[in-house]
Amino acid sequence: MPPPPALPVCLLLLLLLAVPRPAEAAAAAAATRPLLFELRARQVPAGALPRPASKLRFHHNVSLTVSLAVGTPPQNVTMVLDTGSELSWLLCAPGGGGGGGGRSALPFRPRASRTFASVPCGSAQCRSRDLPSPPACDGASKQCRVSLSYADGSSSDGALATEIFTVGQGPPLRAAFGCMATAFDTSPDGVATAGLLGMNRGALSFVSQASTRRFSYCISDRDDAGVLLLGHSDLPFLPLNYTPLYQPAMPLPYFDRVAYSVQLLGIRVGGKPLPIPASVLAPDHTGAGQTMVDSGTQFTFLLGDAYSALKAEFSRQTKLWLPALNDPNFAFQEAFDTCFRVPQGRAPPARLPTVTLLFNGAQMTVAGDRLLYKVPGERRGGDGVWCLTFGNADMVPITAYVIGHHHQMNVWVEYDLERGRVGLAPIRCDVASERLGLML
Picture (tube, rainbow, N blue to C red):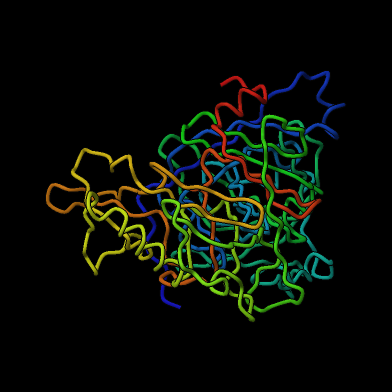
């Protein structure tokens, strides 16, 4: 596999802040009421948020982050909320089992917590085979070790441990996580991420360990109007359309069985269905070709044949008024090569054709300013370069369709594990926030 492409200049983070509840009601509500949060956007430098190698390593560009308390007494940390990853991990200060040497504004300090505990080699957690790199036993310390690979090709290992996690006004939870030693960059304004909160369906994910059966979010195109909801709540103002989670009858070598996988049935451009055979959109006999909904990925990726059909039709419908870049040697992030020239200082024309992804029972329409992305620092004469926000998965390379965070803006996305489905509903996030009682 070739080395991953370089990260873009900036990463957009959505900062998740707990909404306070009245103290006298919090204890009684914690076990039954959903937890409601605000989402806010912050900029951090590229390279701040490496991903495990099997999870779109270089596309942690747009990330949800959650502020929570860990340990006893509690330490406040900020973690990336990632529906595409399983094992949660924290950057640990030296002496916490991760090996030391990390540098961050907000590392977790295991020695300062009286509830921190290393996971021994003989535990069931150390025998987990859900992770891309299964845990291993350190013969000298008899502690369970975990390893992760990062976008720049480096790797880090640490100790598998357990600790008390508290999210908002929810009850404390003892959960397993990786206590890692790797250093991460921080943002210029002091906002740092100390780790990652794994939210897929694996046994070691935070969702599984917390027995969370439903969670949902709305990613805003503004920096102050997003919402995250942990738990179940009746939302009569949201007419959700559901698509079932897809799981093959037999285990397949390239199918990620703990991802949020759905069935992609077709794609329309400007209302015109693309001539893509159903077999191209479905997993093959090895499991390659599944469609995943991933909050840790910025844009959407299509496998080669589907991408080529989209590129051809989008270019055909816009060729008279949106000049193509026509540079065969250019591909933004080495995966986005459907690019156009727009006069510097101007936005693309408003009449761009919509792109609609069709699922079993639901659909997602990408329109307006979510269709094209201005490539930072790239110019051709007096023109800026704008690229279609659908990438060619074959160029990365990855063997899956991935529905990215950018295309989930102003869409309510619900993960219903109890009924095995994902719900979608277009809505302005500021409206959803108001309906849920958030004062923004």
